Image (cartoon, rainbow over all chains, first blue to last red):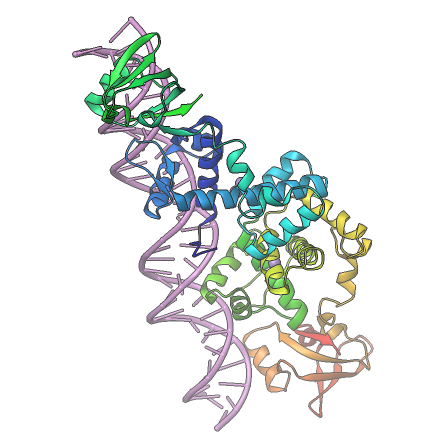
Length: 225
Length: 225
DNA sequence: CCCAATTTTTAGGTTAACCTAAAACTAATC
DNA sequence: GATTAGTTTTAGGTTAACCTAAAAATTGGG
Ligand SMILES: [Mn+2]
Ligand SMILES: [Mn+2]
Ligand SMILES: [Mn+2]
Ligand SMILES: [Mn+2]
């Protein structure tokens, strides 16, 4: 309900793609976005720079793409408009899935807040959606598909839980070291124990047992399994 | 139903504006279009050049802007989409007139043929429009507001009818002469008589009686009153 | 550690759609 | 006919959003 800086259609599409990719794959890479939107990777890269400047994503060179708070909000809004429009076109008007989806992704950028909220009302009244499921916030959605299995840093995982490595955030030597220990993307890890001050964390990876310092573990992005 | 060269959003808006202005004022001038779309006249001028190249309008330097056959078709399609969307947003969803109109003029460019025709079906079923009134051709519309009081050349006006000068198509000396005779824009004329071969046409303007050669009369665009 | 494959970034374009300012032209009056 | 006001066009920009090709960094094995 605040400022809501005017985003261009492209910027909205980038945000939506990032949101969807993170939800599906756990991460949104430049090439994934490029394939999704059918544009060159270098164009995506430029777009991301702008989103970064606007504070909608956080991106360090070669680093993973994350939505900031305001970026997430904006992405959800676009996605919600897209889904509303899709439902309306497909379910109410009987437009084919392909056309409905295609048109929805163009119209989503042109729908004012007023029209959007009136359309939500209409869809609720006609039982195509449930009240709390979409109304402007898509609350339920945040929990159900869970934004792709909760992502957090390895040092935050509680003892006994299992997780899968998504990305190693650090660079250079440390990254090398961690990867050489078998902490590659996709590797399954289990947190076996933690010393009193949290400092050496004991994990099991690919059968091996490993001790990690907390600051090392804090560099490893994982998703709970 | 044919080729339907891809028009950009801007080009569609130009065509729509031209169509509406001709209908309302009898002519579409560069400045009118510019005011209507809230852009600079020079930008409109550039846009018109492109439309001209595409064969959608016919435009000679400093001359009047006319829609060609295909331009008219394209303009009608855009206008029809605009009106459908407006009706849907305003009448069905209850969106305010301003928002409905504003959104309609953005969405009109994003609506596929399929979605458009399904929406027309929907509006017909819900009695917001009549079948032949809009279905893709807007037939009725062409006649009712009559594309602004039938425009034709003065030599085609039948004896006894009255008309109003819209534009003098010729240039230079002849135009000067005709204007000096009082045939300015807005002047009311009455065709009093015509010689056997149609040649000298007798008209009355601002009280005076005048004789015009047929080729002179053929340069004067008028609308019937 | 080193290498090849992949990914990301940079460098250097193009195009559509705008803009302002100034020039060229037209309209209407004196 | 000349003057002035208004309109249209040209000239010379800017910006967003793309592109291709090449450089730089990362990934995952050997
Ligand atoms: Mn979109
Ligand atoms: Mn979309
Ligand atoms: Mn429009
Ligand atoms: Mn419109």
